[in-house]
Length: 115
Image 1 (spheres, rainbow, N blue to C red):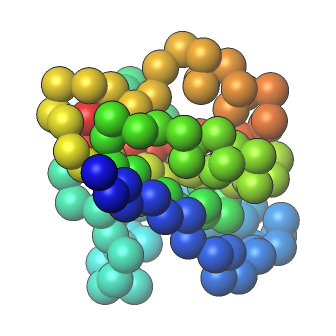
Image 2 (image 1 turned 30 degrees about the horizontal axis):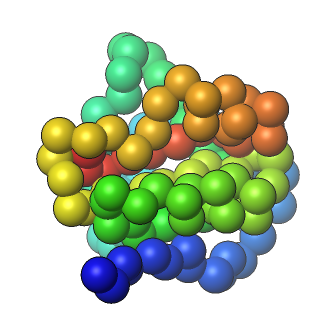
């Protein structure tokens, strides 16, 4: 069985100063201004959550989640991991152990689209 596993190459590295300037801007405002790259339907787990940082994107075909290990290893402190998860709407690709690994790595956060 062929698995579709992709980690996108880092396109650019934003400076800490630029990231800091974005910290207080709503994601919807940024999405309207850039008109591209806006993830529709993504909601925070709790009200008032803010997330900003350089992005590492992953396309994951379940049930094989091993690519997430590589994504974590290739991420830098302060990065935001964005995962597009397809293949099984009943199986989660991110849980408490990967969250712990992300915290240890110093990720700013994780966004999962899909299961």
